[in-house]
Image 1: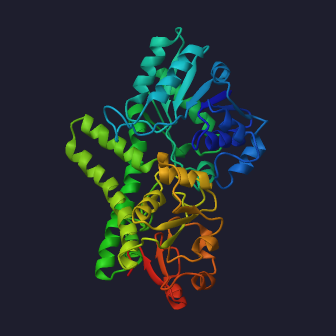
Image 2: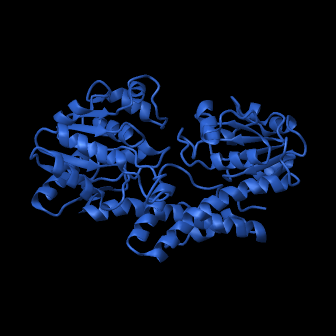
Image 3: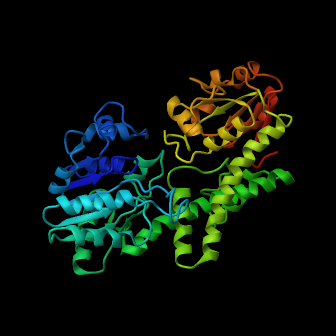
Length: 453
């Protein structure tokens, strides 16, 4: 069997590497238009940081895992074609700010139709709105040379930072297809690929539309829990309750459970906000404004939480941070990844810069150029935005520290040493509630957690 994956990003690269590792009899080719990205996958410095990914790629690359820019050749030779291209939120036209931009998906469908030889199984791996499979099938049928195509939905449920563990032992593998003899046969072929290492009882098959919608709904429910506990964190700060204690108490209820009840500065990443806004747009499209409003409130609460965190810094520092140095610990949207998409740090840095602060950022995995690009956009350079090479360098001379990413190394720092090098009074704002706040108080810090007095 030969598999081709179009798109060498956060989804395509790790997923195909795991298939190659666990199914050595399958030839896997990952293709992308970006020569620089493919060169990185073929180098010792992968374009994605993910714990365990380097080892998986080293074991399989050159054996049955190959990275290439030859999209046409890969399509011709493949039995199964995964589509893992970007589906960002539209920034223009109808549905701007909500709907998914499917131009790359449509382009790939046309390319497949043009270059496919023989029957193919097309697998949607990108996060896409409901009924996208219908669009892909329509394009394939209108442009192909009477070839047989079966379109399946196989959404990814990876969490960045734990993607390799998630791929090794997934909660479930979801495959959606048409309930026809050929559709059922195609689903069985794809299920057979995953069955090389995933128990059959964890491989779920549904119709196409249920599979497509399940991905959006899963992310919406997870994000909803984060926004819910973050809303409670504000009430905890106002009343003197401790949000971690509240989360622990309610999480003991088996009907609720403890996961995704960690209060923070806010969620980020490529999926949560994008998928919820896509869900909002779908609800509006199908004349369900009340449902749309409900899910949109999850995103609004998240945006408010990020603004609230920056506002709390300003108010605590005597209502002004102008000309004050604020050290921001962490820039990736979560630990163990270098992904910064929709990171809370972007919003916090922008808000502090707008208050005329000097913002010094340190992140162990995100390059300085990317930090500046994410914060400043096309605005060019800003001398008040500085990227430090260590947490100690960022904190030296600072009036306050804001922990925005929960990197483990931030728990191990010598905060007595850091405190001694800061302007006094020295403030600590733990946006992830990962530090020992009572101990920091003993050192002399004025501390603020999320949902903690």
